Image (tube, rainbow, N blue to C red; front, side, top):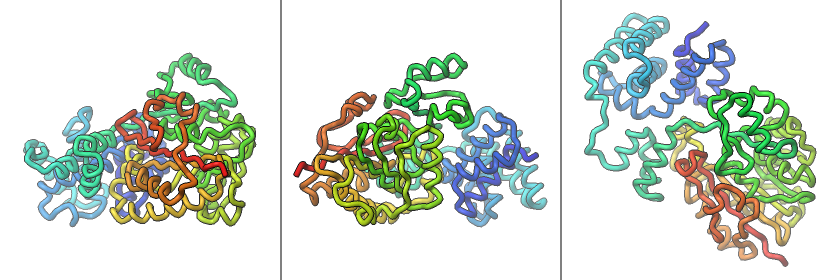
Length: 450
């Protein structure tokens, strides 16, 4: 059976060499490994921590690697990063154990020279801890980039948009472990009833301060393995994401369109809010994702959802203008609001990606807008904090579409914990540090009655 560090190293190498997603690769490897829960927890900590802190770890390690980190084989580079992460950021693992485990791994995977190099580098670090510090005299973007391990171009971008203090708070929040939050299926249970049931089972559980449908569960492990999940009583969803369906505010009997629906969390939430009465068209461009939505609807006992597979840019060729009472466009985006959950995302994006995705969002908004009934509501949402994709995108849309205006906040929004944040004539921007939830943007627009 592999050790926790071997599993972590395999995942890190796959992320480095093959561009694998750390969360998906880690889940796959853990399922194969048979590790005990405590070891699986260590492997998870090592993968996410090493990925998240990558440029800071490279900055420290480069001082001790004579030929430079870039010249090393990928697995050796990943092994050093993982070891430096333990030395710098994990207090509970003794330094000698970190070095010993790293040398053993190097011997098993490489030759004597590599294990000797790994041993020498790590022991040099222990002898010179003063070199594992970030200098005080750096410019703001470089300092934040190294202290909180984000690409410098991204830090500069956030400083320009939000100011230095907020940019640093975003980066700091992105390195904190995410909360585990679940949404109660209100067609089956009340939140109060489920909270009492979970507490009686010994779980640490509390109501979400953001969503009236949400619960925060601490120290319970994977909620997808519980009977509550299996029986359709809960869905696993971030608290910010739960606000989107409430902004749509669908009523029983309405015709609703979810343009980019997979994996189905917001679709099924809307169906629950409608008490499963009405018709929701859940569209996604990827055929293999249809089943994800269908499976969620079936698990939750929801019959009002029709799943289709179309290019969202061509939905106006499938449906007549003004077909839907409510439309949700949860648009493809840069994803900078969910870095806490997907730490490798910060390293995989480029500045040009942000510009390209904004062009696609504009086209999707144009298509979705044509399908809203007079008097109907269009909700535009993203899981990013990028202003050009959020407020900037909606401002440009409204300037080009006088038939749309900001919609009054729905009663459902007023009942949420973010009620005081909903401006009357703007979208809601949640940053990762605001509620320890994902960064999200939600705009609610109404089409004028003809």
